[in-house]
Structures are given as structure tokens and as C-alpha cells.
Length: 153
Image: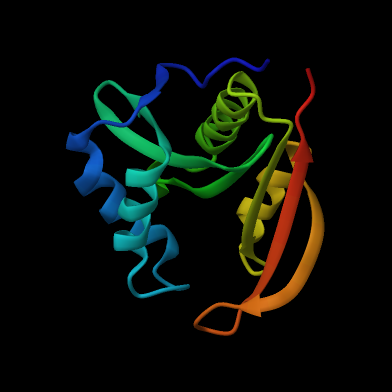
């Protein structure tokens, strides 16, 4: 497994992370849905949420939830603009995969917008492959892309 970026730790979210999750959810997903922050908080409340931080500063979060036998859904993953390009998103994705595997997961899947080029690149480099696309659209007309990865032993 690849090491975490220097000084970055990943931990389970706490109640005190709700304002950060709401703020980053709005910043990262606001172009897709005007209630993105609230949806991020709601997803976080029903699932496992991981937070990346360095020196007490929250840098990103990932929400992963079981949605069937052996199947986990990456409901959200976002990184602050100032932390992009540092490997934080990749580290959160690896942590989400590890969480799923440790809870019996054999598959991880997600849906993102085809216009979210940076995220698509991170997901592809991590081994996720497109399984469907274009079946739904986001508020501004972006097409959806479903991606999936089989989790090895």
C-alpha cells in the first residue's frame, strides 16, 4: 500500500466534523446540486465517514456505505482546493477501500459526473473501471458515470 502524504492522517469522522463536511460538500459538489452540503452531511450520518487531516486541519473526507452483500458505495469523496494534488484524494480512496474490505467488501462502486475529470483520473489510477454511463444527469446537464472495482484479498 502506498504511504500517506507527509504529515497526513486519516481518522473516523466525529460530530465536530459536520460543519467541515457541509462546507466542503457545498464547495466540491455545489455545481451538481444546490443542497450538496446537506446531502454530504446526511450521507455521512448514515455511513462511515473518513476525514484526512494534517496538523489539525481537515483536508478532505470520504463517505463509504454498505449497500448489499459484499458491496460498498463510495457516496462522496472530496478534498479542499488547497490540498488537491498532494495525494489526499488517493489516500482517502485507499482508506475507503480498506474499510470496505475489512467489513467483508468484495466490490466498491461510485457515481460521478463525466465532467469531473480530476476525480475520474484518480479513480481510474486506483483501478476503478467505468461500468455504465450517461443514464442520468446532474442539475447542470453533466452526464453520470458509474465506476466499480473488485476488491482483492
